[in-house]
Amino acid sequence: ALQRAGFLTVVPGKDELQLGVAARALGGAALAGQEALEVIRPMLQAFADQYQAAVALGRREDNSIVYLLRCQGNSPLLMNLRVGSRIPLFHSAIGWAYLAGCSMEERADLLNQAKKNNELGEPDEAKAMRSALVQYADLGYVIHERPQHQINTVAVAVELPFGERYVISCGGPASLLPHALLKDEVGPLLAELARKLHPVLLMGRHI
Image 1 (tube, helix red, strand yellow):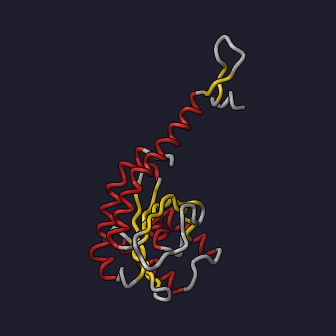
Image 2 (cartoon, helix red, strand yellow):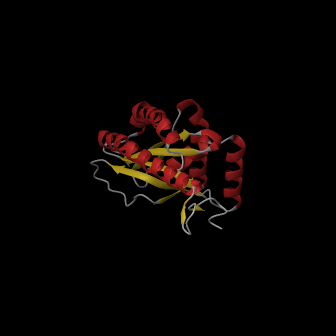
Image 3 (cartoon, one colour):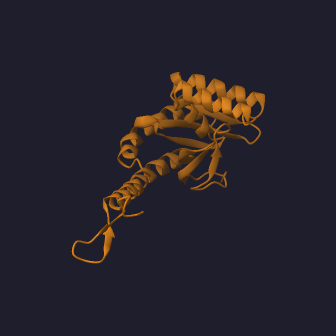
C-alpha cells in the first residue's frame, strides 16, 4: 500500500526499499511548517510582551480552534492554555475571527448547525458574537469581552488560498486591555501582524 501511494519505492538493482516522492514531499511540508512556526514565534512573543498579554496562533478542527503557538507576556493573569489547547469556536474571540473570515454560506452552515446542536450558548453571548461578525468587515478584527472573568480578547483571521484560514488572538486582563485600547490600538496592530504572517503561513501551509 505504501508503494502504491508513492511513499516507498524499490532501490534499482537491490532487494531494498527507499523513501518515495510522496514521503519526501510530506517531510518537506512538515519541515516547512515547522520553520514557519519558528519564524512566527518571535513575532507573537514581541506582541505579547508589548501588551503584557497572551498571543496565540490557531487553526480550526471541528468546532474548536486548536492552538499551534501560544506566547505569554509578563501578565499577572496566567491562563492555563498551551499549544494543543482547544478553544470553542462559538465562545471565543479566536473562534469568532475564524467565523468572520468564512464565506457567507460557510458561516451560515456552521451557525445553523451550532444552533441545531444548542452550541451557541446564552442569548447575550450569541448576540455579541453576531454583532462582532458584522463589525469585522469594517474593523478587520473581533473583540470578545468576558466581564465575569475580567478578560478581554481581540482576534484576526489570516486568509490563505482555497478557503484555508489561520487565526491569531491577543487577550489578557481587562485592566491591561480595556475596550478602548483594543479598538483603537491593539486590534489594528494585530490586523497588521496578520498581514505580516500571511506570506510566512503561505510558504509553510501544511503546518
